[in-house]
Length: 434
Image 1 (cartoon, rainbow, N blue to C red):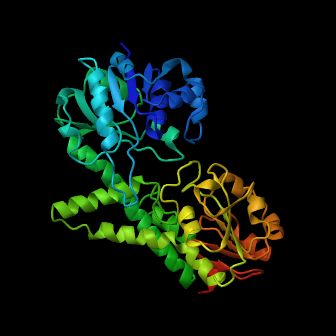
Image 2: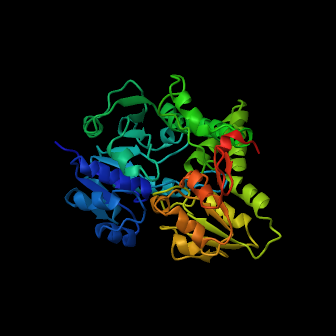
Image 3: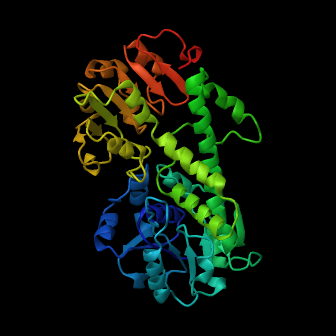
């Protein structure tokens, strides 16, 4: 018999996870206490931006039942707690709403239903819940903003926390997980809770090493992109390692895990110094664009206009949590700043001038910073940028544009991991130190 699966909490996590389950043919009940949100989802209008999500909602409409009544979860064999957990600026989680949601769901569960905590919680959280261990599980979520549907529909593996690691999973739960055709790793609750944190810590370690070395490249004449293939061929690093320079960590999830590790280290008198170093490295890298602007476009020129393309912390998402672009706008208070993002409204950065398009933002600008690598920015013709701008400074952290062409068009070009190219430069910047 095919189990019915419920999801409590229709935030980014719940929406993307529920459509993936429905796509595997399971009757899926999607609960959220917000009637307006439920109405939007019924009409195929998700509140989050994810590639393929609208199509997934439309294509699996028959398997999805959206409801604002918690009592409708009583028909489910498995219920996931799938609301996103908010974090503050320091990365600390606020579990108040999750505690209340779990209490409400437990009241409506059928006597044999399984409860699975899918949202991220600190080690020790699940074992303390008032549910029998044979019906209570923790499942590690590994969604990525901008790739959530891909990750939810084709997971690499399932990591399941159990009261007793050696106990077989209930038949209904096993049927659901096996439908995705990936490895299932069972372990005790605390191990699973910490595995999620460990995954992100290893990612942050790669991010920090990449950013530190890429910044050195910018000053000594090396080119990080030339080094990456050599690193990927080292089996200790691997072909899938995160080796793309960036502006520090953002989005909230990684920051939360670092805050958790620092707290656990302090509580248990273990060494969390490396985590503190990662946090400091991230803050330094976030301000990379501001440092270039301060050097290349002195603040004394208050009439200068800085055009910023992109406010989301990464492409294919609406999230601005700890966004380097938003931080940059705040750093530029007192200057004229004109912003455009294809998804995020300029209203989130008071004081900035909204633009109607990318070209509108850069018209007459003295400097241009491409802060989010949206595809539509990659499609802009570089000569058009040169004609639109008054100044000649282009800062492109993620390499959206071809730096050689930018310089040929009479603009100064700065990108992560490589020395700058100056206007009209015919010399390979790797042969010049700064």
